[in-house]
Image (cartoon, rainbow, N blue to C red; front, side, top):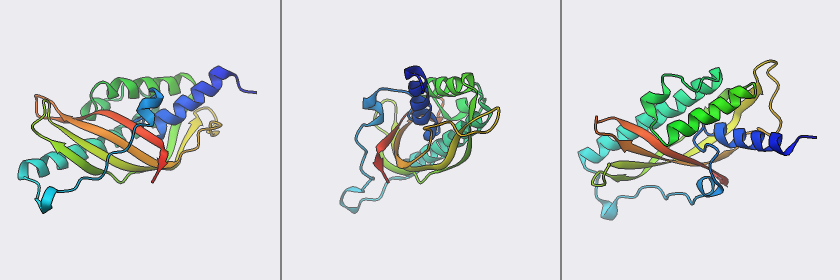
Length: 188
């Protein structure tokens, strides 16, 4: 029989690494927030060149974030150098904490995480400028396993669910993913 601490650790790991650590081990409010509707151009208006460039840069940062998180999770390395290329706080700290917790318990991630992101809004006039991203993450083939013997961690099965993220443009011009949440209660 698993202890309460053990169940909490497993639940936290499932949430944290199912979406490449996008959800972290935050509060229920973070992981069950309502989804953002896909972006629609008002009155058929086409996005400006600046908006298209922001979308492209934000999606590249999001893709880089997922890949860096997968790589860091495969190696159980919370200090993996690629994380800082695509992530900013508070998400960077949450991802590192989740990977470190996984490492401390002798686990790592293997398998495939599929992603289908779309930009839902671009706010270039906000300070700082942001881009909202919505994704359908398929983590059904993304497994949390014990590093020692590759056994699947009980209760760590993945799902296909909605995830949201915010890309923020920093003063140096880089777009980094600063927040993210998995919405496991919203299948896609």
